[in-house]
Length: 396
Image (cartoon, rainbow, N blue to C red; front, side, top):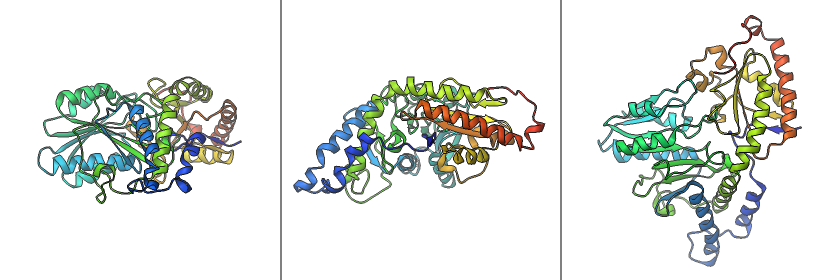
């Protein structure tokens, strides 16, 4: 049996989304900026897709949603746009992020630091979440932007975005959130949370790869990082990929409509898998069980190297992860687990399982059987596990 449990890395395209996209490859293929009927034929579905995106995050009509290639581009646009518009002009010189942001945030921050920008990396608490009070403490007069992820891609922990948004609004600081891991799992409301910008990628909520979005609050426009034509109101040059835009819009609608299912059926399957793993001795749920997206488990299994576990599972048709797929070629210890203060050995044992609304009960039963077998086998040949004190704490 094939069991895909790496949905925080990417998701399958919903078949309904695929059907919605099909006509825009060979039947309705005009450039949407062309004035003839072939271009005009694309407009109705593009408008519908934008409506779905606006409704999905509760954006106002006067706000902008810019179609991008992915959340990485959107994140770059926000951080570099603020750098160009405020920091290079000498207005501000400070950015606040969390220490567990996705590489598409932290790598940009490292680049900006080389350009002379001051960046504060706010530490997470014992549950792997940034406290709103810690963000408030990091903000100063020179702060141009706060960027805090909505939900962590590895632990699934949900960050206090509404509280941080209120703080940023009171302090007069721009606020951005990478909502890539939140959309389709929990409600995302940009108005309620006082957000100026959010980033997202369609392929994280059963849309196509290669398309994402950047929400921009009215009056908070940014200098674009791609210059050329006047697409997206001049905010992002390049001919719009109509099929992907239509697919992302449909995927957003389906994801929002499925939130109750995600938070009941998917959560129950996640908990069944998690509870079965915790029956094994010396297992830890990183960050604890509360305040998480309903599909995600990050578990440490003492005495089992993460890469070895993945190989074993892959041999049995199960796809999982040791962390963010965007950093999977880096064999350093899991940075999120390092942020918890985990020792080096423990930080190499993290395994992430992430479900979707297409995961079945039969697949979970199969995964439980194979996970137990893999742990037994790998511990039997582990030199470190034989010397590990048994029954360490079951949550970190």
